[in-house]
Length: 338
Image (cartoon, rainbow, N blue to C red; front, side, top):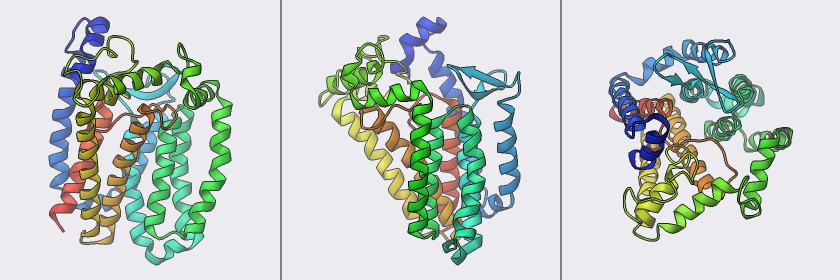
């Protein structure tokens, strides 16, 4: 983060360590909360599912109350907490993992029934997804929707129910893209960025230039050229291209390997958990982090349309880092009690 952000921080805030210091504070806070979560038995999370759902709903609604929501780039996704801004949608994803694990484990074989398995879960998640879409935040909306399909399938919902929901959602997603001009522009940039090198395709082109310039071993830590005000958001959504440019194919392969290990270990914890609730919760947290990492990597490599999604644990962003570390603490709690 320091390598990718120091010049931008010095230019914008007069302090090259601005982003590094803030992320360091968030990292320490996240590690403390991770240790606390590790020492809380998973069964206690079951008792707080509905209070957490209500709390998350209130936070999302506060975004639309004047004086609470912070508008950045036309989107109101952050709550102002004085010394920093918090993104409620990050908490919503973790809370939905608690809820889905609790509800699916409680219903058991009834998950195969449309009215018991698919309908109530889609309805409750849909309320949160709708509020996130209004912000607007289509990227998080899609992440939660795709993640929900994975969990429903794992939970025992019939495959034709899941496929029917996907098919019914496709026209809505297409309409959402066409309805907003900037989303349609992102789609055009995804199809052919080289046709719009100075505007629509500028970011993805410079992302590809960064990745390609790194070669096998990279140009060296701190020596990226694309972070010199060419590649927008080099410390947040597009931090991986900077890793690729400075550390090369070996560096980006190492990052992919770390995420792969995390996913494999998370699945193993789910398979060996002591109860169904813990198993579903482990699957929910692991698939959520894994899906977001895969989509971020796909975006920066030009394999998916551009979305404002951070790379877990690596991108700058306090909300994402703290909530991700709490999720790791929950996973460790499940693992320790297998």
